[in-house]
Image (cartoon, rainbow, N blue to C red; front, side):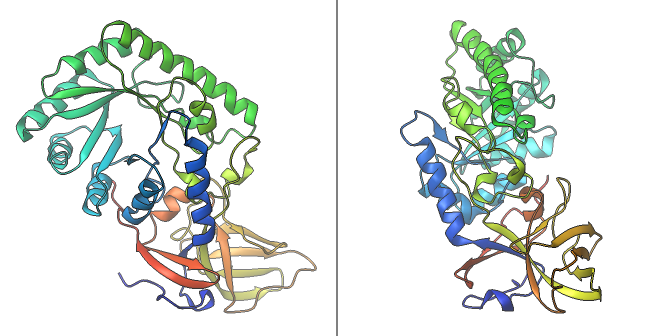
Length: 369
């Protein structure tokens, strides 16, 4: 697909809706995360489901990350095609097609996968044998999110034992991500949820090690909590993703003690209709910005409130006493949730000082299988 901009173009000339990345803020965010983990005895493995971009993944690795993680086999394939050599697919893969593809991918990149089920372990072992590879496998432990994962403690030990005994698998450690804690607003409330999750991860790890099985990795954490996992003495690897962009939902969290990550990701929209002095309509609706975590916010324009989205339209209320944007005027929107918003676009239009500096493809856009 043709990009909505060209290099050297002023931001005001970019066609819309467009996914805009402020390179100065993005670069600061990369540096803040690198500094936050440096010398702390933990590895950084950012979550690429946020950006789905081989270009961004390679910049994260250049800044000190050991690799990236993602959620889908097709995402891993797109990242490997783009030159990313170390990928954790931190999700369960079930079915012959997925298993064959992930085993084939392990021939050209370092691939680690997750499992939480004994029959899936057997299927992973068979797929690895058929491909002539040895897959690295983390057992996923439910540490409180109530999503995937085997129960902590003894059940985790039994599953780890099964992985360690499989001839074509290598037990790589424990995946222990507490996703539901990431958007708990208060810092102390988030700390408490992660403390509970950490104890479940610790219990599982200690039982595994006590059974004579090496447990090199305990991995998890997100943008909203990674400081707590970093300092836990249990986690060896951190998976924050949204920190490179941020979004309107994360901006509602309290951040005392965390790095001051800035908003680098926006949707550029054009005012396409001015039906009244109380309302204007932009060309960025449900197909341009996800609203699962709330509507976008209008950046830098007090008195403008994005109140409703339909497929191709976004309705913006204009407060009394506020000058309404003119027909054709461009507005920057802060997405409610950065991850699914990125998946709606083909390109990052990368801007510095109001000028387009680079165009990066969203390498794994739509990669859900």
